[in-house]
Amino acid sequence: MTQKTEVWQRGPLLEIPPLLQPVAHALLQAREELHEYLHGFPDELLWIRPAGLASAGFHLQHLSGVLDRVFTYARAEGLSELQFDQLAQEGKDTFEKLSVDDLVRRFNSQVDLAMAQLKTTEESTLTSYRGIGRAGLPSTVIGLLFHAAEHTMRHLGQLLVTIAVVKNNGV
Image (cartoon, rainbow, N blue to C red; front, side):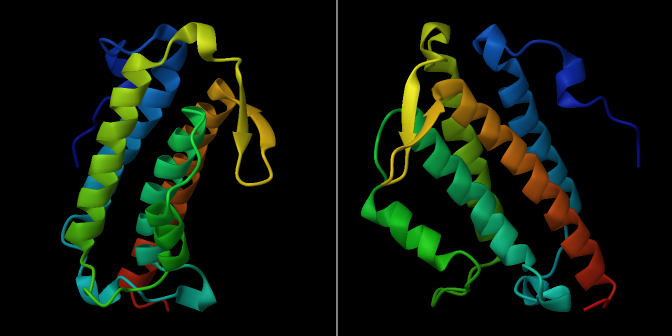
């Protein structure tokens, strides 16, 4: 494997506000690592839960779902029925028999949507209040966006460990 410069070391991303650069860097880094580690990962291992922990399929669904939900809250919008349905399906294979490629495409799409939203987020709104969920738990735009990046990287790490374990039959 060749040594690659991480996204944050490549300099500022055009069109992304300066205060949101770390969020964008983290999401793009996650996408690159996800592609690298899932290359050739077999569909039949997607739903294996090593030691009863979350499956690779769950982590892939959750990565996309959280980005979608948290960025929705950052726009001061409530979740749609589709988002609630997708939340309920996290960790479950669907009747359509999801593939690794399906789930990677969904994550790529969510990262693209997140990047587009970051480009249009005014820095003057970053400390604006945003309610989370039906309870309206308190946060801010920057709090939500930072959480989305941090949460993505945390689950990516868990996904990478899960992939390594199930590929090596350490179930």
